[in-house]
Length: 234
Length: 385
Image 1 (cartoon, rainbow over the protein chains, first blue to last red):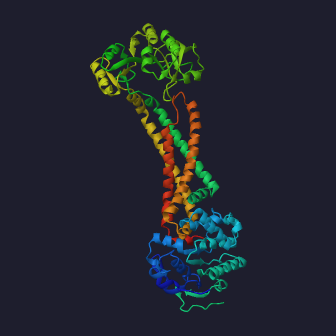
Image 2 (image 1 turned 60 degrees about the vertical axis):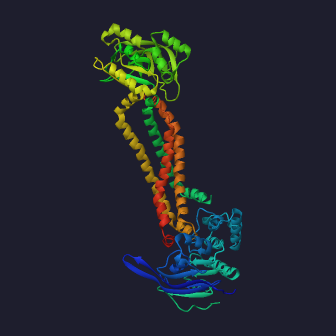
Image 3 (image 1 turned 120 degrees about the vertical axis):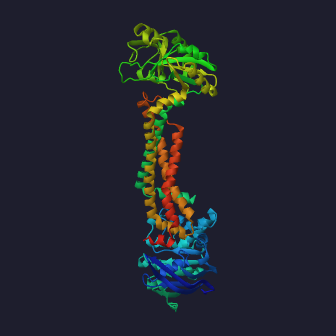
């Protein structure tokens, strides 16, 4: 799969958190470019700022300074309302703890992002079925999260993340709560999405074996991003 | 539709908590409805009063009688249509615990003035023909198992002696507001007895009941009546029937105010109960709300889910509360019939129940909504795991 034009451009991004009267820098002068179709793994020790960076790229949090452009749109200038709309259309999220809504079935969880798109019920149904087929969970569509294993729940979360066909898929420790077998299945799935559907993926992980599946690995240390990316490990 | 599905499922996520919350709302709505019914029952006489009837009594107090001679003077006043009169008899039937209202009235004018007491033509004729006749309301007859022709003896408490009556009529109320627990008989019968046993009490009446031609003439007619007896030995106070009934209630106004206050305190308590439930639900679901926001849902949509859940709970509780109010009020009506002749759940109590449940649902959801709308996504997601 060919890597194409820049999709994510991060320039001089700074982010800090206030703890009492102290201002704690979390990200310092971050610069990063990500091309369309790329699969980036962000690694680093706890507290290095990798989840914060992921949140900023996905517009879940706001920068103190600097710019983040995704698909040519400077998301740091968008209002809350515009960001909500932008996230709904352009970003798919996969979390460590799956974050499925427990009162909804697998089908309904996957349908959630589509309710904001204006698709008809029939169209939504087709999209959801397709997404569940991709993650091989069509037969579990009527099951509630509590009736699924951790690996299955994460596959539902991936189906939910990709059902709107987003520009960008962000995953925060997607295998962090899974056993080896389930983790491998999830990584296989993400790899397939990247290679076969050309999905741009940013994954935060502690696990070197998970990071190995990415095309590029970048490391964060105490808020600083290393300058040189690790080469494609494969 | 989808959001409704979520909010309903959320509402029943913790079944025990939901059950207890709904139970609390049900009891509160039931208590509120019954208290409002009780207050309404207290005002029952006021509700049944007519705008075309005036009551003339002694200006000093109701317990002071007025001379019977006043009736002719009152009749001569413009816009006066009918003059009737009556006296509180205060008789006891067998035992003091068998209390009911009993009056001596001028029979024909009284029946003409109070068309809401429905008697058959036969009963009316029998009542008017027999001086010892009495008429009772349907509920009172049922209470003591009286039938037409029965001999009823009342022991006088204000007027000495035992008085025997023959039951000649059992009236029905024209509508639900009419008191069907009264006992009335011929004033002439009482007066003749008094002439024999206590002449000083004879030829006097407790009050006059005056029918006027038009309600808008009430103030003027009342003024003219009182003016006619100014500087006499027994000055009068004339007021509309409604004002007359209200003057009785004013004696118990403090109690009524307290009951009214308690009915609203019940609502305040239930706000606290539902608010607690919603706060717990919010704390458990912060992460989920953050996920909704992450997916692109807006604050108002999340707020709508919380508000909907809160109102779902209060509405269900309200429904059960209203459903229980009727049978329990019916039991209370039977138990309290001697004190509250009309004890029925007023429509306005049900309306207030519904409004209260909506207000409780709204107030209980306000803080959780504010928090869910304002929480930063990153902070919300951090609470998961």
